[in-house]
Image (cartoon, rainbow, N blue to C red; front, side, top):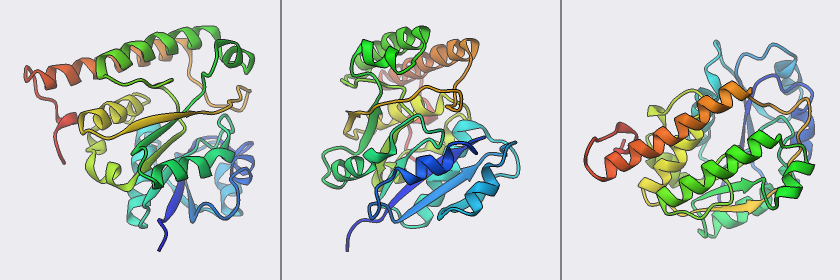
Length: 246
C-alpha cells in the first residue's frame, strides 16, 4: 500500500487565493487536503466549504505557529505518512507537490524546504523586498554555519515532512508565532533528521501574506535566539525543552 499524502494549508484571509493554490496541485498526487482557518475576516471559510478539502475552523485566532500545530495534529490523526505544507496565499508554486512527495517517500530527505532564492536577480525580480532578501541571506548563512547545514533558505513556508518527523519533534512546545518555523527546523537538526531543499518559483503580490519591517526584525532576532538556545543545550549549559524528547 502506498504512503498516504496529505497537504495542509494554514489559512488566514486567503479567500482570493485558496482555490488557485488548490487547483495547481497536480491530480492524483494527494490523498487529502486539510485547510485550517485561523479566524479569517474574509470569505475564506465560505470558499473552502465548496472545495474538495477538509476544513477545520479555529474558534479563536492562534497565530501562524498555532495554526500549524492544528494542521500537523490533524494530519497525523488521519494517518498521513507524508505531509506537505503549502501556504494558500498563492505565493508558492503548488505544482511542485509531487516532487516534494517523491523525495520524501524515497527517504532522501526527512524534511524538505522550497527555496525561493535561486539567484539574487530572480528573487528580486519576483518581487521580494530588498530588505527581506538581505535579512534572509544573512540569517540563512548564519543558521547554516551554526547548525552544520547547507540550505539555500531557512525561512521558506513551503515544507514537507515524513511522518516520523512530526511524531518525534515536540512541536507543541514551540511558539504560536512566526518563529515556530525556525524552532521546528532547529529541532529537526537536533534530532538528527535529514534536511534538504528544492528551488521553487515564488510570487509576491498584494494577496500574498507578509509581515511588516518591524515584525520582520523581531522575527530575525527571535530566530537567532533559537539557535543560541540550541547551542546552550548542546553544550549542556542550559537545557531547553525545545530539544528534549516528547
